[in-house]
Each structure stands twice: as C-alpha cells, then as structure tokens.
Amino acid sequence: MTKRKPKALGLISGGLDSMLALKIVRDVLGCEVRAINFYTGFCITETQRRRGTRKSDGSVKPNEALVAGAELETEVELIDISDAGYLDVIANPKFGYGANANPCVDCRIDMFQRARVMLEEWGGDFVFTGEVLGQRPKSQRRDTLGLIEKNAGLQGRLLRPLSAKLLPPTRAEEEGLIDREKLLDISGRGRKEQIALAQELGIGSFPQPAGGCCYLTDEAFARKFFDILDHREERRIEKEEIVLLASGRHFRLSPRAKLVVGRTEGENFQLERHAPGRYLLQAPDHNGPVGLVEGEPTWEEMVVASRILARYGQGRAEPRLVVEWRRDGGVEDRLEVVPYRDDAEIEKLRI
Amino acid sequence: MERPHPDRTVDATGTFCPVPIIETAKVARDLSPGQVILVLATDPGIESDVPVWCRGTGNEHLGTETDGRTWRCWIRLGGPRAGRT
Image 1 (tube, chains in turn orange, cyan):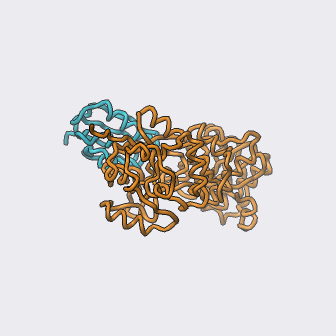
Image 2: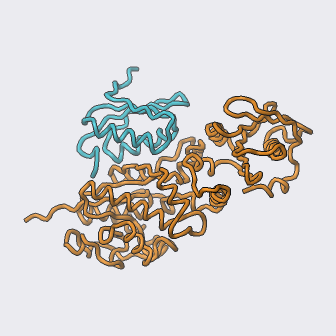
Image 3: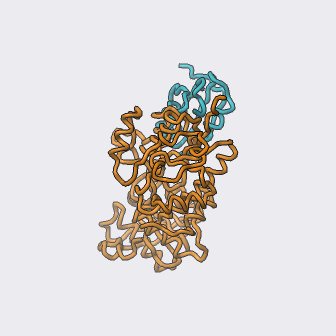
C-alpha cells in the first residue's frame, strides 16, 4: 500500500528559519504544504510602508513573507489577524510581557490556536514553524515551547523541524508519516548552521539577519503603548491606534490629553487620515508639521500643545505665531503662541 | 497602447498591505488559468508586492502603471503552481 502524503500547515514569517522549515517539510519529508503568514498590525516594515518610507532607490520594500514565497516558489497566504480579539490578547496577556510590550507567549498561543482551526478545516496532519530551541529568551525555551503547544491545543501536532530531534516526537513522527531521522537538532542563537543549510537546500536569498519585525519589542513603541493603556479605565487598544503609535513624536499633556506631532510628510498624511474625532493642529502661515490631539485638553494644555507644534515648524524663530485647531473639518480655535525655544521643557512631556 | 482586458477587477484602493494581496488571492481562486485580474490600489507597496506574489504563486505579472496616487497592476493567472504547493 502506498503511504499517503502528509499535509502540513506552515507558519511563515519570511525569515530564514521559517523558509528552511518549509523546505525541509516539503522537499525533504515530502509533505503537501500550505504556507500562511499572520499579519498582526505590529510589523515594522508594514508600518514604514504606510508612512511612505522608501528604500534609497525609491522603491518600496516588499512584504517579507511574499518574498519568501517567491524564493520558495510557494504561495504564502496572508491572513490579517489584527482584529479586536488579537488586540485584547496583546493588551491583557495571561503570561505577561517580555522586555518591552511583547507578550510573545500569548501572541504565539493566539496564532497557533488560529492555525489549529485552519489545520482542522483543511484536514491537515500537523502545523510547523521555523522556531529554534533556545533562540529567543522567553518564547523559545524548552518549557515555553511545550506550554504554547498545550495552550494552543496542538499537543503532538506542532513540528519544529529545525530543533525536532531535541524535542519530544510529534504524532506524525510516531505514526511513521514523517521520518524523524531527517529532522534536525539545531539550538541556540547562532545562524551558522542555518546559513549552511540554506546553501545545501538551494535557498538563494533570505533576509539578513533574520525575518520578523515586531514593534512590540521596540522600547520607544512600548512606552507609547503602555501610556495608552495606563490612561484608560478599560485595558484595551484600538486597531487604528497602532499606526498612530508608530508615527510622530508623542507628548503626554495631561491624563486627559495627548499630542502627536508628525516628523515627515508621510507621518503628517497619517495623522490627517486619523483626524476624525480628534483635534488637528497646524500653523497656517508657515510650513511645518501637523499635530493631532486626543482627548479633551484644557485651555492651558492647548497653549502647551500649540507651542510644541510651533517649535517643529519653519516659523520656530518667529516671536509669535498662530496655530489653528480644527475638528471634523471646522476651525475650533486659533491660538497665538510663542514657540518653545528650550527642548528640555518639551522633553519632560515626551512619551 | 491597449491594456489587457481584465476578467475581474480587484478594487483595493484605500486599504494597505496585506489587504490588496488577500483580496487578489481570493479572486484568483475563483478564476481559471489564463484569465486576467486588474488590481487597483493606493498602497505604494502594491508595486513591489504583486511581482513577488506572482513569483510565489506561479502567476504572471503583466505590468503596473501609476499616476502617483493609484496603482494598476495586471496579472495573468498561471497554471499548475498557481495555488498551494
């Protein structure tokens, strides 16, 4: 009797490890592979693209998972999980945060739960990833890998081909669907073995040093992320706030009000797009940034916000200038202010 | 010059990655090899994403035009590899 071809669902970040995992599962183990990539909304590359950032040659960086798919000649299905359910996991992680705002364990459990549902709908045998034992301090420790697998409901159905020989065998290995001997025993943070393997498996190009790009691991982003949560009664974050968190200079005016000032044309565009329901600030007589104020500032806070905005525009050397406050298209107020001259005063308010 | 006649048009204007590619992939699954999709998008990333998506899926990127605000990408669906591995 001919052995049936196992069906494997792969989580592809676009980095070298997940590319290798796919190559091994498809070409070495001989499985039918379906490749997916979860879009969380916290991807640095995507956010830069939204802000209009271009490479030095003027082109826009392509999506890394799609690039990996092109190299592997495989369709990588992009799946948007940046919904309220995912954001609730990020704002209220059961297993806590890493060094910054990165709840890697909860994030992976959420992703793997979604992958499990897809696996079962597809009639697949197992899920695989490019995770490497000991590569990351929290989410890829031996105990954490097991915890994630259990909480995602994927016990025995989650294969990490790069480290599989160092981990308990999966059901597919035990049932003889795939050959454990063809799996690997890579561990730790180094990349030498993976780079050699890429050459052996004919992977011509891959991201340097690694794929994946998560704003939640960024210290400055984390400050702004927690600032939002700390100034809300209910611990939640909205989808549209994520792009704003990665754009502009942020200033906490008071518990009630926050100012964001654009740094580039792309960021000004983003702020303008998010103006509905917020105050949009601009100095009409001078070129310069736009500002966005969230919340209900007092008159004193409006003055401070206007002076900060004026500091970053071309009228910063003027003795006084006008800052216009608009809301939902109409002018609400015009304040004539003295631009801040001393950055130390502004820095105290910086988030 | 006459552009390829699209069998389906994906209007992804006003959305950002990954939505334009997700919508294009959905439409591609409903069509047959040889048919043409026109993707309309305002995310500049579409200019880079469509060619690499086509390479991964075995589809053919026929070309992209832009007026600087909207991008129009033509894709001809490929054969056996235009889908999952």
